[in-house]
Length: 341
Image 1 (cartoon, rainbow, N blue to C red):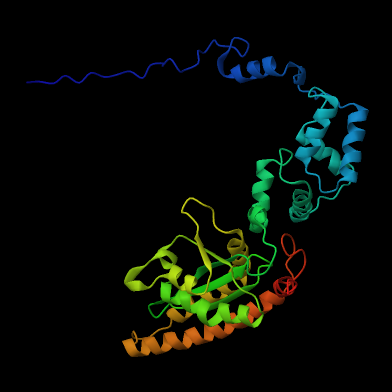
Image 2 (image 1 turned 135 degrees about the vertical axis):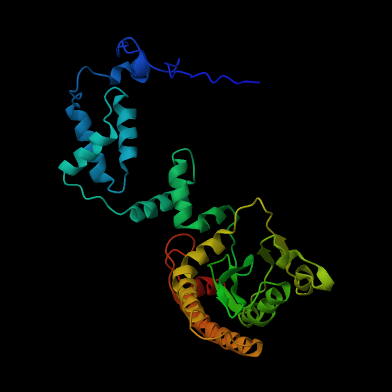
């Protein structure tokens, strides 16, 4: 049996544009013709830009001076609503106009602070684009909990943990409880994330602090992980809470994380987690033979005690440092938490 190999010529395909095609006849300028049909008033002949009317320029400049935090997209939308789409300036024109007027652009954080204040007074409605709402949540995740706002200390406390790093084969985690009434936090560093450690945090740290202040915890909110929902060998986290009259609520897997835990992580990450992760990595790279099991446990215990002392000092500073924005509004967690007493 013999095979014949035929050569296939690379000829033109139906997707190729004919050489004689002109821009007016079609080709790759179809999107321009479509835009001319959709917005005929915004197209002009040649490369000369359509000049803006003096009243439009005056309106944009006046609005920008009266609202220094107003973004350029909003200025374009306001001009379009007042003068119509055919007379409204483009974003590039607004930017050039603001530069010529000598307007100094402020930092985005300042605008988000003003936007957050407006959301708290007027509510989140159609006036707020989804893009800026996501920006607000990234800046202050506590805004996601505004519809579940608590009125007294201990009404709802959320519990979670954050991974610090590994040292001598042991994983270090920061376990915390955060009161949704002012973000007051208690916590401790442990090696692991099991149910016993979660109960130990409440029994030795959180509950004594609340009892000393005369405050009782009504509800404890956690993740839906095994640490807080497991009932293996009778070690039930929910059973411990029932002994103290605390209601347990575990967030479902599809629910977003608690905003107070996310906000706390924003402060914990640069202030404690990252410095200690670098220290653990540098300690793990020291030269020499691997340590024995007993020596490794001894070193891990010493590192744990050192980390606990560091975290206790950091946590004390956190509870005494004012927090801007919702929900503390410039008050420290300890002052906000104690105002209910």
